[in-house]
Structures are given as structure tokens and as C-alpha cells.
Image (cartoon, rainbow, N blue to C red):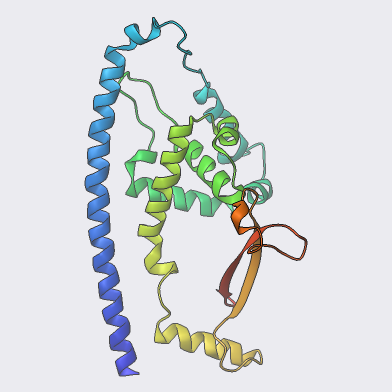
Length: 242
């Protein structure tokens, strides 16, 4: 048991060091990206008159993002909102309080999601708009055009939000939710399973079929479920408290 504890502690130290280095690298990359973004925005603003006069250039789409943000807040995020917590849970696969906690954590970690003004002094998107777009893509596999209709966001912003959300989630929650079980965790799980008539079990394997719509034709015979649909099997070890 002592050897196991030592191994677990060493793995924990190595994991923390990797996370620290990864976070430092991401911070440096974000600072560089922000500097490049500011430079590009200044150049675009300077050349706006020249670009708009080019024949055949499609004008920018006014998505009315601020009015959509206001409607989104009234739908879900204010007292006496239009839709209840039950509606939110059914549409976004989580309770509003969990959504707000994740949004708060990630906004503190990555300022990209915080509403701020651009180079022209205009307010950007609300954090709720970016997070709703990301959750919609992760929960339903929605395309960027579908998310644009809901949150009024361009393709580049949607994809940037998705990547940053996943990076932040990995950094913030890996230690608590993707770590190896400690001896205390194992003892608790074994005791609970034994009390329910399953001695020696720490969890049960559960799986689901995730339908793969646009799978490669060359893999035709490798993926399929009993309904004849192409799918990928997602497996997880589930415990009584997960």
C-alpha cells in the first residue's frame, strides 16, 4: 500500500508539472495571438475604405448580436426567465447552475470569453453567447451555421471559442475529474459496491453508440450498430456517484 501511495504521489507531481508547463505555454500563445489580432484589426480598420470600394466584395453581415444576446439573457439567465431550468437542462444537457459555474471558471482562466470592447470601441459578444454556442456544438454536433442562428456568431469566432473552451476545460478539470483514483477513493467504492452485493467492483462499464453521419466510406465495414447505423462506441466506467 505504501508503494502504491508513493507511485500515485509521483504521478500526481508529474501531472501537476505538465499542467503548469502547458498553462504557461498557452498563456504565452494567447498573448501572442492577442497582439497579432490587434495588429490585424488595426490594419483592417485602416484599409476598410479601400476594401469596401472593391467591386464584387460581399458586405459584412449585421448579425444583430447585441439584440440576440439580450434575448438569450431573457430566455435563460435572468430571474423569471422565459424558459425554466427544465427547458435549459433538456436543451443543453446540464443544469443552469453547472453551466454558470463552468462559465465563471473558464472566464477567470481565459479572458477571451469575457465581454470587452474591440478596437473600434464596440462591445463584443456576451460570455453566455460564446458558451451556448460551444455547448450546442459539443452536445449535438451542430455545425457553425446552425450555431450562428442561435448565438449570432461568425464561423471563426465559433471555432475559436470551441478550441479555447476545450483547452480551458482540460487544464481546469483534469486534476479532479480525469485523475487516477486514490486509495481512499478505491476503498470507498469497494465498500459501496460490497454493500450492494458486488464485492470487488469499483465501477460498472457503460457504453453508448454515437451516430457518425459523415463517416469515411473506406471504413464502411468497421463501424455499425444493430440498427444498421454507422456509430462509434463510447465507453466509461460509472460509479454510484457519477
